[in-house]
Image 1 (cartoon, rainbow, N blue to C red):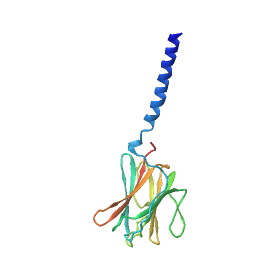
Image 2: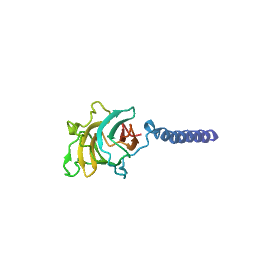
Image 3: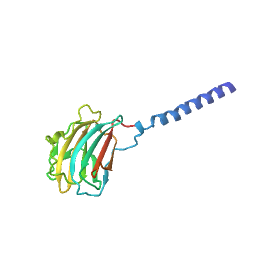
Image 4: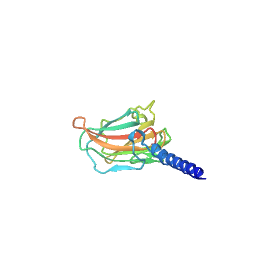
Length: 178
């Protein structure tokens, strides 16, 4: 009987150990990413105009960079939406992807910034997460882009000074959840 109690106790400890250890391994963040998918914003407006948009691929996320001709770094409002709409008119912007991010930069677009195809403002062919980047216009000191992504995934937003006297708004969207 004592042997049965010892075996039963050891089995219980083994099962509890596996149960407690397994979630810790599953909770390890993907590439250290601990972002969420809720709206992100910062309030300062800037008169520094948007001069361009570009994209890049990293091992854990795809990156959108909005370039400005001056400082300070711009404010922004970035969030998932059911449909991206054009600033001022409210016209829907059709985008490829399973989810859509509206990127509002609190800065006007440069008079010289006119992408040859506003619906394809930056190349994203072959990207893991991005499906389309569209220029949605500039209205009353706000410039807007639509970002079509594969699915609703975690993202982060931040600003950087430079290069030179310019500044940048950066939006990173993870390839997957943790």
